[in-house]
Image (cartoon, rainbow, N blue to C red; front, top):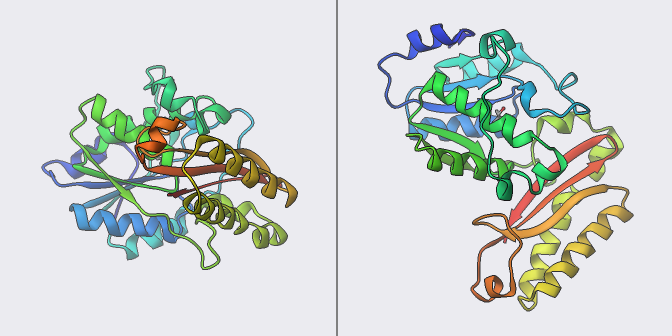
Length: 282
Ligand code: PAF
């Protein structure tokens, strides 16, 4: 595997390739990331991965400084997966001058849910992903469904800006107890780690209760409130637990429910100092 940090060297290395499958990451790789690499292999050749902890998508009081950086281990894992190039720029490589030009998603998608609780997050994500796409020029790129809203932001960005890239969604990979794999799981204490799978259980329970009853907006609100209460009682601090439409992440009206719009439950909750997100399609 070639490990490249400069944009110019990346361009040289990839010149003439027109079936590149790209997987952007922030490193600290786990089985979830490896599943993205394997999916990429099925959709293109060669596979190019990136590791870059993108300051632009972290708020001032978030975990940019403590975000785990495990480059040597990550490299060994990517070598094993047969990744052709790892693009691992430094901040100076990717942002040689302040990144004043930004890509800002529309508010109805970028300022809700994650965007409400992490202002500027999707601006930072969209900007870096655009730049990584420009550096790599992939034919396809793989994004995990664990970051459901991020996947939707990228899809809409690629579509509206006519980027010639197919976005491939990858299913969430879970630990055997149901906890969605995430680099931030490493922040959990032993006690919190034992509690953490309850988030997914509450999502599953909510989904089942929704399916067992009538499709009415008042029930939907009640189920959201119940899920929030259960987690609060167990010591979690919910940012949001919300049932939205898969197509646009907006709250369904009664007419939407009557039309059987596909739904998804999305949650972001803090357990101690760690913020976890998860989702479940209905
Ligand atoms: O999902 C991530 O790891 C990041 O948001 C991404 C897409 C690599 C952009 O920094």
